Image (cartoon, rainbow over all chains, first blue to last red; front, side, top):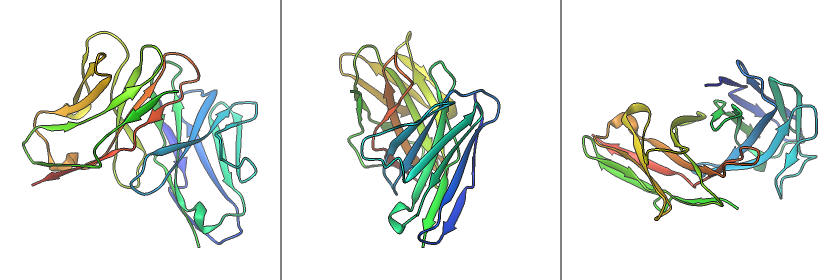
Amino acid sequence: GAVVSQHPSRVICKSGTSVKIECRSLDFQATTMFWYRQFPKQSLMLMATSNEGSKATYEQGVEKDKFLINHASLTLSTLTVTSAHPEDSSFYICSVTDGNTEAFFGQGTRLTVV
Amino acid sequence: AQSVAQPEDQVNVAEGNPLTVKCTYSVSGNPYLFWYVQYPNRGLQFLLKYITGDNLVKGSYGFEAEFNKSQTSFHLKKPSALVSDSALYFCAVRPPYGNNRLAFGKGNQVVVIP
């Protein structure tokens, strides 16, 4: 299956700053990647679908100006949390599908905004 | 729209006893069904999937799941639980069309007691 690398695994930032999270598909060219957010002991909430070479598709209630997604190549998608606030603290996970049936997930990024 | 229900919050089982984690789903058409496991501060790891064919699906680490169309269920089972099976388990579903978007259940915390 596809190998997905997500970086960084943990990040602490100050309120008002921006944080970029990278998601790389190491052995598969992904035209579509997905970004999820997960609160403690809760399920994954789909934030947006990242499309290579075009704009991301955001889920209802997700601010596109707050969570900037760039999918500039077939192996890299980035999520930038802009002007971060403590309520943005969460676990962010990306996933890649292999074009058939299966989804493969990055190891996640724990964001803490202080 | 697709949805998944995992009715229990936590499943406690003694080591060596059978483990069952319940999942029911709602989706248009024939479903693609998945089970994933998540360890603390990690991404999701694929356990098994049902696409078509035999209703009993065998997956990683001795897990299996049975697709029951009439009951719209896809319960995860393991004949003999290990302490290392303690983790968060997610059931997911998607229709056989579209952009591979998965709908996740809320997750079940499994605690295997030594």
